[in-house]
Image (cartoon, rainbow, N blue to C red; front, top):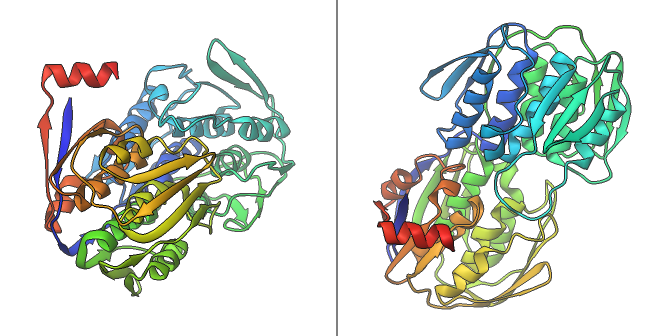
Length: 428
Protein backbone atom coordinates (compact mmCIF):
# COMPACT_ATOMS: atom_id res chain seq x y z
CA UNK A 1 0.00 0.00 0.00
CA UNK A 2 1.15 3.53 -0.74
CA UNK A 3 0.63 6.89 0.90
CA UNK A 4 0.86 10.37 -0.61
CA UNK A 5 3.07 12.98 1.03
CA UNK A 6 2.31 16.65 0.43
CA UNK A 7 4.65 19.44 1.51
CA UNK A 8 2.64 22.60 1.98
CA UNK A 9 3.47 26.27 1.71
CA UNK A 10 4.55 26.37 -1.94
CA UNK A 11 3.12 28.83 -4.45
CA UNK A 12 1.74 27.11 -7.54
CA UNK A 13 2.03 28.49 -11.05
CA UNK A 14 1.85 27.15 -14.59
CA UNK A 15 -0.62 25.18 -16.67
CA UNK A 16 -2.52 21.94 -16.11
CA UNK A 17 -4.54 20.04 -18.72
CA UNK A 18 -7.81 18.46 -17.62
CA UNK A 19 -8.53 14.81 -18.52
CA UNK A 20 -11.71 13.25 -19.87
CA UNK A 21 -14.71 13.17 -17.54
CA UNK A 22 -14.70 10.25 -15.11
CA UNK A 23 -18.46 10.53 -14.53
CA UNK A 24 -19.07 10.34 -18.31
CA UNK A 25 -16.59 7.54 -18.92
CA UNK A 26 -18.20 5.17 -16.42
CA UNK A 27 -21.48 5.41 -18.38
CA UNK A 28 -20.07 5.64 -21.92
CA UNK A 29 -18.14 2.37 -21.60
CA UNK A 30 -21.18 0.25 -20.59
CA UNK A 31 -23.20 2.02 -23.33
CA UNK A 32 -20.99 0.35 -25.98
CA UNK A 33 -22.76 -2.96 -25.13
CA UNK A 34 -25.80 -1.69 -27.08
CA UNK A 35 -24.01 -1.47 -30.45
CA UNK A 36 -23.70 -4.25 -33.03
CA UNK A 37 -20.26 -3.14 -34.31
CA UNK A 38 -17.11 -1.49 -32.87
CA UNK A 39 -17.35 1.77 -30.88
CA UNK A 40 -14.33 4.02 -30.30
CA UNK A 41 -14.27 6.42 -27.35
CA UNK A 42 -11.47 8.99 -27.42
CA UNK A 43 -9.87 10.90 -24.55
CA UNK A 44 -10.72 8.59 -21.64
CA UNK A 45 -8.95 9.31 -18.35
CA UNK A 46 -6.25 6.87 -17.22
CA UNK A 47 -7.85 5.92 -13.88
CA UNK A 48 -8.55 2.66 -12.09
CA UNK A 49 -12.34 2.80 -12.68
CA UNK A 50 -11.74 2.59 -16.46
CA UNK A 51 -9.59 -0.52 -16.05
CA UNK A 52 -12.33 -2.24 -14.02
CA UNK A 53 -15.00 -1.39 -16.63
CA UNK A 54 -12.79 -2.66 -19.50
CA UNK A 55 -12.30 -5.94 -17.60
CA UNK A 56 -16.06 -6.26 -17.08
CA UNK A 57 -16.68 -5.82 -20.84
CA UNK A 58 -14.12 -8.55 -21.54
CA UNK A 59 -15.80 -10.82 -18.96
CA UNK A 60 -19.03 -10.76 -21.01
CA UNK A 61 -17.19 -11.48 -24.28
CA UNK A 62 -16.37 -8.00 -25.57
CA UNK A 63 -13.10 -7.33 -27.40
CA UNK A 64 -11.42 -4.19 -26.06
CA UNK A 65 -8.38 -2.56 -27.65
CA UNK A 66 -6.66 0.43 -26.08
CA UNK A 67 -4.36 2.96 -27.70
CA UNK A 68 -3.28 5.63 -25.23
CA UNK A 69 -6.47 7.30 -23.95
CA UNK A 70 -8.66 5.85 -26.70
CA UNK A 71 -10.45 2.51 -26.53
CA UNK A 72 -12.30 0.55 -29.18
CA UNK A 73 -14.93 -1.91 -28.02
CA UNK A 74 -16.22 -4.65 -30.33
CA UNK A 75 -19.45 -5.79 -28.64
CA UNK A 76 -20.56 -8.19 -31.39
CA UNK A 77 -19.65 -11.38 -29.49
CA UNK A 78 -20.91 -10.29 -26.07
CA UNK A 79 -23.25 -12.59 -24.16
CA UNK A 80 -25.60 -11.96 -21.25
CA UNK A 81 -23.26 -13.40 -18.65
CA UNK A 82 -24.17 -12.80 -14.99
CA UNK A 83 -21.88 -10.36 -13.14
CA UNK A 84 -22.97 -11.07 -9.56
CA UNK A 85 -19.85 -9.94 -7.69
CA UNK A 86 -16.08 -9.51 -8.11
CA UNK A 87 -15.18 -6.37 -10.06
CA UNK A 88 -18.80 -5.12 -10.03
CA UNK A 89 -18.47 -4.60 -6.27
CA UNK A 90 -15.52 -2.23 -6.72
CA UNK A 91 -17.35 0.72 -8.21
CA UNK A 92 -20.86 2.05 -7.97
CA UNK A 93 -21.11 2.99 -11.65
CA UNK A 94 -21.13 -0.71 -12.57
CA UNK A 95 -24.92 -0.34 -12.23
CA UNK A 96 -24.91 1.06 -15.79
CA UNK A 97 -24.42 -2.55 -16.92
CA UNK A 98 -28.04 -3.09 -15.77
CA UNK A 99 -29.54 -0.66 -18.28
CA UNK A 100 -27.15 -1.55 -21.11
CA UNK A 101 -27.50 -5.34 -20.77
CA UNK A 102 -31.27 -5.11 -20.28
CA UNK A 103 -31.48 -2.93 -23.41
CA UNK A 104 -29.48 -5.39 -25.51
CA UNK A 105 -30.27 -8.84 -24.07
CA UNK A 106 -33.58 -8.19 -22.24
CA UNK A 107 -31.98 -9.70 -19.14
CA UNK A 108 -29.10 -9.10 -16.74
CA UNK A 109 -27.74 -10.25 -13.39
CA UNK A 110 -25.62 -7.56 -11.72
CA UNK A 111 -24.17 -7.54 -8.19
CA UNK A 112 -25.24 -4.66 -5.99
CA UNK A 113 -22.63 -2.00 -6.74
CA UNK A 114 -19.82 -0.71 -4.55
CA UNK A 115 -17.60 2.41 -4.83
CA UNK A 116 -17.33 5.27 -2.35
CA UNK A 117 -19.37 4.85 0.82
CA UNK A 118 -21.40 8.07 0.92
CA UNK A 119 -24.36 6.88 2.92
CA UNK A 120 -27.61 5.53 1.48
CA UNK A 121 -27.78 5.93 -2.31
CA UNK A 122 -30.62 3.59 -3.28
CA UNK A 123 -31.25 2.48 -6.83
CA UNK A 124 -35.02 2.51 -6.44
CA UNK A 125 -35.48 5.09 -9.23
CA UNK A 126 -33.45 2.93 -11.63
CA UNK A 127 -35.66 -0.07 -10.76
CA UNK A 128 -38.84 2.02 -11.11
CA UNK A 129 -37.72 2.95 -14.65
CA UNK A 130 -36.83 -0.62 -15.64
CA UNK A 131 -40.20 -1.91 -14.36
CA UNK A 132 -42.06 0.82 -16.24
CA UNK A 133 -40.37 -0.40 -19.45
CA UNK A 134 -41.63 -3.93 -18.76
CA UNK A 135 -38.80 -5.61 -16.86
CA UNK A 136 -39.29 -7.84 -13.85
CA UNK A 137 -36.73 -6.90 -11.18
CA UNK A 138 -35.83 -9.10 -8.21
CA UNK A 139 -33.09 -9.04 -5.61
CA UNK A 140 -31.63 -12.49 -5.10
CA UNK A 141 -28.59 -13.29 -2.93
CA UNK A 142 -27.15 -9.80 -3.17
CA UNK A 143 -27.58 -9.42 -6.93
CA UNK A 144 -30.22 -7.64 -9.03
CA UNK A 145 -31.96 -9.91 -11.57
CA UNK A 146 -33.58 -8.15 -14.55
CA UNK A 147 -35.80 -10.04 -17.01
CA UNK A 148 -38.10 -8.83 -19.80
CA UNK A 149 -39.91 -10.57 -22.65
CA UNK A 150 -40.10 -7.20 -24.38
CA UNK A 151 -39.24 -3.62 -23.44
CA UNK A 152 -41.93 -1.08 -24.29
CA UNK A 153 -41.64 2.69 -24.14
CA UNK A 154 -43.28 4.38 -21.14
CA UNK A 155 -43.71 7.71 -19.40
CA UNK A 156 -41.46 7.68 -16.33
CA UNK A 157 -41.45 10.37 -13.65
CA UNK A 158 -38.36 10.33 -11.40
CA UNK A 159 -39.35 11.08 -7.79
CA UNK A 160 -35.79 12.25 -7.14
CA UNK A 161 -33.53 13.92 -9.71
CA UNK A 162 -30.90 11.23 -10.29
CA UNK A 163 -28.05 11.22 -12.81
CA UNK A 164 -27.61 7.46 -12.49
CA UNK A 165 -31.29 6.66 -12.95
CA UNK A 166 -31.64 9.08 -15.90
CA UNK A 167 -28.71 7.47 -17.75
CA UNK A 168 -29.69 3.90 -16.87
CA UNK A 169 -33.25 4.40 -18.14
CA UNK A 170 -31.89 5.98 -21.33
CA UNK A 171 -29.67 2.92 -21.89
CA UNK A 172 -32.59 0.54 -21.41
CA UNK A 173 -35.03 2.59 -23.49
CA UNK A 174 -33.09 3.33 -26.69
CA UNK A 175 -33.95 -0.11 -28.15
CA UNK A 176 -37.41 -0.45 -26.56
CA UNK A 177 -40.53 -0.50 -28.73
CA UNK A 178 -42.23 2.91 -28.94
CA UNK A 179 -41.62 6.18 -27.15
CA UNK A 180 -40.16 6.72 -23.66
CA UNK A 181 -40.49 10.03 -21.83
CA UNK A 182 -38.33 10.63 -18.74
CA UNK A 183 -39.73 13.47 -16.63
CA UNK A 184 -37.82 15.25 -13.86
CA UNK A 185 -34.65 14.01 -15.56
CA UNK A 186 -31.22 15.13 -14.38
CA UNK A 187 -29.54 17.80 -16.56
CA UNK A 188 -25.83 17.14 -15.94
CA UNK A 189 -23.35 17.55 -18.84
CA UNK A 190 -22.47 13.86 -18.51
CA UNK A 191 -26.05 12.97 -19.52
CA UNK A 192 -25.68 15.06 -22.69
CA UNK A 193 -22.36 13.27 -23.36
CA UNK A 194 -23.99 9.82 -23.10
CA UNK A 195 -26.94 10.95 -25.24
CA UNK A 196 -24.49 12.25 -27.87
CA UNK A 197 -22.77 8.85 -28.03
CA UNK A 198 -26.09 7.00 -28.27
CA UNK A 199 -27.32 9.40 -30.98
CA UNK A 200 -24.11 8.79 -32.96
CA UNK A 201 -24.89 5.06 -32.66
CA UNK A 202 -28.33 5.69 -34.20
CA UNK A 203 -30.55 6.32 -31.17
CA UNK A 204 -33.33 8.91 -31.35
CA UNK A 205 -33.07 11.10 -28.24
CA UNK A 206 -34.38 14.63 -27.71
CA UNK A 207 -34.16 16.89 -24.67
CA UNK A 208 -30.94 15.64 -23.03
CA UNK A 209 -29.80 18.43 -20.72
CA UNK A 210 -33.40 19.45 -19.93
CA UNK A 211 -35.76 17.93 -17.36
CA UNK A 212 -37.78 16.06 -20.02
CA UNK A 213 -36.01 13.52 -22.25
CA UNK A 214 -37.87 11.87 -25.14
CA UNK A 215 -36.60 8.64 -26.66
CA UNK A 216 -37.99 6.93 -29.74
CA UNK A 217 -36.88 3.29 -29.67
CA UNK A 218 -34.89 1.86 -32.61
CA UNK A 219 -34.16 -1.76 -33.56
CA UNK A 220 -30.41 -1.50 -34.08
CA UNK A 221 -27.52 0.64 -32.90
CA UNK A 222 -24.21 0.60 -34.75
CA UNK A 223 -20.62 1.52 -33.95
CA UNK A 224 -19.29 5.07 -34.04
CA UNK A 225 -16.49 7.33 -32.84
CA UNK A 226 -16.98 9.63 -29.84
CA UNK A 227 -14.78 12.11 -27.94
CA UNK A 228 -15.50 12.43 -24.23
CA UNK A 229 -16.08 15.84 -22.57
CA UNK A 230 -13.49 17.25 -20.12
CA UNK A 231 -13.89 16.41 -16.43
CA UNK A 232 -15.61 19.36 -14.76
CA UNK A 233 -14.92 17.95 -11.27
CA UNK A 234 -11.18 17.56 -11.92
CA UNK A 235 -11.18 21.08 -13.40
CA UNK A 236 -13.03 22.39 -10.34
CA UNK A 237 -10.61 20.67 -7.96
CA UNK A 238 -7.55 22.28 -9.60
CA UNK A 239 -9.38 25.62 -9.72
CA UNK A 240 -9.97 25.43 -5.94
CA UNK A 241 -6.33 24.45 -5.32
CA UNK A 242 -5.17 27.36 -7.51
CA UNK A 243 -7.46 29.77 -5.64
CA UNK A 244 -5.84 28.73 -2.35
CA UNK A 245 -2.18 28.38 -3.32
CA UNK A 246 -1.71 29.69 -6.84
CA UNK A 247 0.00 32.77 -8.19
CA UNK A 248 -1.21 32.32 -11.77
CA UNK A 249 -2.53 28.93 -12.84
CA UNK A 250 -4.06 28.12 -16.26
CA UNK A 251 -6.60 25.28 -16.29
CA UNK A 252 -6.67 23.99 -19.87
CA UNK A 253 -9.27 21.83 -21.67
CA UNK A 254 -12.37 22.92 -19.76
CA UNK A 255 -15.94 23.84 -20.70
CA UNK A 256 -16.40 26.98 -18.54
CA UNK A 257 -20.22 26.84 -18.55
CA UNK A 258 -19.97 23.51 -16.68
CA UNK A 259 -18.29 25.35 -13.78
CA UNK A 260 -20.44 28.49 -13.55
CA UNK A 261 -21.63 27.84 -9.98
CA UNK A 262 -18.07 27.29 -8.71
CA UNK A 263 -16.66 30.31 -10.59
CA UNK A 264 -19.41 32.52 -9.15
CA UNK A 265 -18.64 31.42 -5.57
CA UNK A 266 -14.88 31.83 -5.99
CA UNK A 267 -15.35 35.34 -7.37
CA UNK A 268 -17.59 36.09 -4.39
CA UNK A 269 -14.65 35.06 -2.18
CA UNK A 270 -12.34 37.48 -3.99
CA UNK A 271 -10.55 35.10 -6.38
CA UNK A 272 -9.55 36.61 -9.72
CA UNK A 273 -10.69 34.28 -12.54
CA UNK A 274 -10.48 35.00 -16.27
CA UNK A 275 -12.59 32.79 -18.53
CA UNK A 276 -11.45 31.89 -22.05
CA UNK A 277 -13.05 29.55 -24.61
CA UNK A 278 -11.53 26.38 -23.13
CA UNK A 279 -9.36 27.75 -20.32
CA UNK A 280 -9.61 29.31 -16.87
CA UNK A 281 -6.85 31.59 -15.59
CA UNK A 282 -6.82 31.80 -11.78
CA UNK A 283 -4.85 34.36 -9.85
CA UNK A 284 -4.88 33.51 -6.16
CA UNK A 285 -5.84 35.98 -3.44
CA UNK A 286 -4.42 35.61 0.06
CA UNK A 287 -7.33 37.63 1.54
CA UNK A 288 -10.34 35.48 0.87
CA UNK A 289 -13.82 36.22 2.21
CA UNK A 290 -15.94 33.35 3.49
CA UNK A 291 -19.13 32.32 1.67
CA UNK A 292 -21.95 29.83 2.16
CA UNK A 293 -22.63 27.06 -0.35
CA UNK A 294 -25.42 24.55 -0.78
CA UNK A 295 -24.94 21.57 -3.09
CA UNK A 296 -27.71 21.10 -5.63
CA UNK A 297 -28.34 19.11 -8.79
CA UNK A 298 -26.83 20.64 -11.94
CA UNK A 299 -26.56 23.54 -12.68
CA UNK A 300 -26.25 24.11 -8.92
CA UNK A 301 -23.04 23.72 -6.90
CA UNK A 302 -21.73 20.14 -7.40
CA UNK A 303 -21.64 17.81 -4.41
CA UNK A 304 -18.37 16.41 -5.82
CA UNK A 305 -16.69 19.80 -5.20
CA UNK A 306 -18.12 20.33 -1.72
CA UNK A 307 -15.22 18.60 0.06
CA UNK A 308 -12.29 20.42 -1.61
CA UNK A 309 -14.23 23.69 -1.29
CA UNK A 310 -14.57 23.05 2.47
CA UNK A 311 -10.77 22.87 2.67
CA UNK A 312 -10.52 26.23 0.86
CA UNK A 313 -12.94 27.87 3.31
CA UNK A 314 -10.49 27.20 6.17
CA UNK A 315 -8.34 29.96 4.63
CA UNK A 316 -11.14 32.52 4.28
CA UNK A 317 -12.01 35.36 6.68
CA UNK A 318 -15.23 34.75 8.61
CA UNK A 319 -17.60 31.83 8.95
CA UNK A 320 -18.80 29.75 6.00
CA UNK A 321 -21.59 27.17 6.00
CA UNK A 322 -21.49 24.23 3.60
CA UNK A 323 -24.78 22.32 3.23
CA UNK A 324 -24.90 19.07 1.26
CA UNK A 325 -28.43 18.34 0.08
CA UNK A 326 -27.31 15.42 -2.13
CA UNK A 327 -25.31 13.10 0.18
CA UNK A 328 -25.92 13.66 3.87
CA UNK A 329 -22.97 11.43 4.85
CA UNK A 330 -20.43 13.38 2.82
CA UNK A 331 -18.60 14.91 5.80
CA UNK A 332 -16.13 12.15 6.62
CA UNK A 333 -13.27 14.46 5.62
CA UNK A 334 -14.13 16.88 8.44
CA UNK A 335 -12.47 14.84 11.21
CA UNK A 336 -9.33 14.56 9.07
CA UNK A 337 -9.28 18.33 8.43
CA UNK A 338 -9.64 18.87 12.17
CA UNK A 339 -6.46 16.83 12.67
CA UNK A 340 -4.81 19.51 10.55
CA UNK A 341 -6.10 22.26 12.90
CA UNK A 342 -9.22 23.21 10.91
CA UNK A 343 -12.02 24.94 12.84
CA UNK A 344 -15.06 22.99 11.59
CA UNK A 345 -18.14 21.52 13.22
CA UNK A 346 -20.88 19.45 11.64
CA UNK A 347 -24.52 20.30 12.35
CA UNK A 348 -26.89 17.89 10.61
CA UNK A 349 -26.29 18.12 6.86
CA UNK A 350 -24.15 21.28 7.21
CA UNK A 351 -20.55 22.01 8.14
CA UNK A 352 -19.66 25.33 9.77
CA UNK A 353 -16.13 26.47 8.93
CA UNK A 354 -14.28 29.26 10.74
CA UNK A 355 -11.25 30.97 9.24
CA UNK A 356 -8.65 31.79 8.45
CA UNK A 357 -6.62 29.16 10.33
CA UNK A 358 -3.07 27.91 9.93
CA UNK A 359 -3.39 24.32 8.80
CA UNK A 360 -0.67 21.95 9.98
CA UNK A 361 0.60 18.81 8.28
CA UNK A 362 -0.73 15.57 9.81
CA UNK A 363 -1.35 11.89 9.10
CA UNK A 364 -4.81 11.61 7.55
CA UNK A 365 -6.83 9.14 5.47
CA UNK A 366 -9.09 9.55 2.46
CA UNK A 367 -12.43 7.84 3.11
CA UNK A 368 -13.68 8.44 -0.44
CA UNK A 369 -12.58 9.97 -3.74
CA UNK A 370 -13.50 13.63 -3.15
CA UNK A 371 -12.45 13.51 0.52
CA UNK A 372 -9.02 12.61 -0.85
CA UNK A 373 -9.09 15.70 -3.07
CA UNK A 374 -9.98 17.84 -0.03
CA UNK A 375 -7.05 16.46 1.97
CA UNK A 376 -4.62 17.09 -0.88
CA UNK A 377 -5.89 20.68 -1.17
CA UNK A 378 -5.53 21.10 2.61
CA UNK A 379 -2.04 19.59 2.54
CA UNK A 380 -0.94 22.11 -0.10
CA UNK A 381 -2.19 24.95 2.14
CA UNK A 382 -0.71 23.56 5.37
CA UNK A 383 2.62 24.08 7.11
CA UNK A 384 4.83 21.00 7.04
CA UNK A 385 4.15 17.60 5.47
CA UNK A 386 0.77 15.88 5.27
CA UNK A 387 0.67 12.09 4.86
CA UNK A 388 -2.47 10.83 3.11
CA UNK A 389 -3.52 7.16 3.18
CA UNK A 390 -6.37 5.64 1.16
CA UNK A 391 -4.90 6.45 -2.26
CA UNK A 392 -7.01 3.74 -3.93
CA UNK A 393 -9.96 6.15 -3.61
CA UNK A 394 -8.05 9.07 -5.16
CA UNK A 395 -6.71 6.95 -8.03
CA UNK A 396 -10.32 6.12 -8.99
CA UNK A 397 -10.97 9.66 -10.22
CA UNK A 398 -7.83 11.74 -10.76
CA UNK A 399 -5.46 10.93 -13.60
CA UNK A 400 -1.71 11.57 -13.06
CA UNK A 401 -2.50 13.61 -9.96
CA UNK A 402 1.04 13.61 -8.58
CA UNK A 403 2.61 14.58 -11.93
CA UNK A 404 0.09 17.34 -12.57
CA UNK A 405 0.70 18.91 -9.15
CA UNK A 406 4.50 18.67 -9.55
CA UNK A 407 4.12 20.38 -12.92
CA UNK A 408 2.52 23.34 -11.09
CA UNK A 409 5.37 23.52 -8.57
CA UNK A 410 3.96 21.45 -5.71
CA UNK A 411 6.16 19.10 -3.73
CA UNK A 412 4.24 15.81 -3.59
CA UNK A 413 5.46 12.23 -3.70
CA UNK A 414 4.36 8.66 -3.01
CA UNK A 415 5.94 6.25 -0.57
CA UNK A 416 5.25 2.66 0.33
CA UNK A 417 3.65 2.29 3.76
CA UNK A 418 5.53 0.31 6.37
CA UNK A 419 3.89 -2.97 7.42
CA UNK A 420 2.89 -1.34 10.69
CA UNK A 421 1.29 1.67 8.93
CA UNK A 422 -0.60 -0.58 6.51
CA UNK A 423 -1.90 -2.70 9.39
CA UNK A 424 -3.00 0.39 11.33
CA UNK A 425 -4.75 1.76 8.24
CA UNK A 426 -6.62 -1.49 7.53
CA UNK A 427 -7.72 -1.83 11.16
CA UNK A 428 -8.82 1.81 11.58
